[in-house]
Image 1 (cartoon, rainbow, N blue to C red):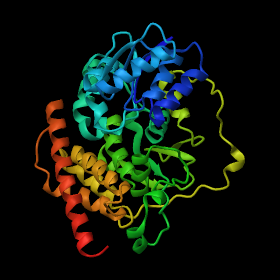
Image 2 (cartoon, one colour):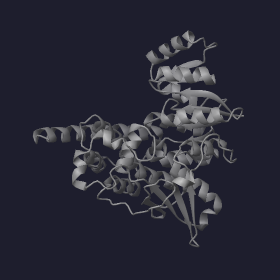
Image 3 (cartoon, rainbow, N blue to C red):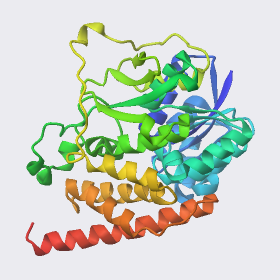
Image 4 (cartoon, one colour):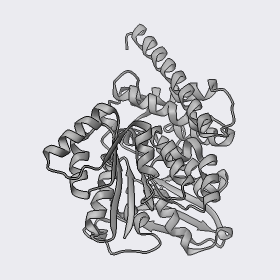
Length: 397
């Protein structure tokens, strides 16, 4: 029985991970759960899975959780912690063999890094870990002989395809992208795009930020950076193609011209189960691919005019240092402002570009350096959002 800690248990990936655990009785034990402010949901998860330790966002939430669990008749109570120390306690619990890193935002980064340094196996669904601190985290993983098992459908697909050959035989990786809901929207109309429209992803059920990142294709830029660190490939060996059907989750082209592609249903439980049960393949319990739905497979090259965030991500990877970290932080601030209607949809890329131009050059030698760069990028991004908002108000937009 594999013992799991889950960071971000009440988020989309965390909930689906627990669904996988429940679908495979006897294979997993949940040691720890780390959540945010959704005390009601994490209380239900604690009752169902009886972890040894659970963490929530703050002290008030910890008190409410204890009260809620007593009212539900949960005895004995698990160890209840909160904040950064709490999520790290879940990630590094001595009984946990594998940590699913799915906490949204940079909050999960130090805890995941600590888990790697403790030698835990990592199922990685948190983009910030490798985008913001790829060099630091992968160096620690090599030192501790820890494998980072990708949960993102694209990297998970590449991980599966790479099992078909040796790394020296790989010519390039091809990440597929749906193109989001604005793939065919006239460029002039993007200024009027609403949060509701951006959140209407054509294929996947995801959280708000990643859904908007899919619409801007910043998520694909992040994935290029992640693929560089996960698979040790150079920037020029990582391509992106638009594939509206999201049937082919990604591909690997080998030096002899052969291409291996991984196909599957648009259901995140598939890559989650793959990561949790690796290196085994375990029969799925409730999801399968519907071949009758596959009428066609389309592919196209993404336009950087339509998707400038993809260009910005490649530039950040090329320049390195603190820029990938700044890219992530600025995007998070900009997306939040867009969802709050304080920034236009094209304004997301504009804010990110502004931050990358102003971000000080620095080397990220320690986790403290990463967090400092993250804070500075957020400060610059907030300034850029405010400036653009004032300009829009002055222009009567």
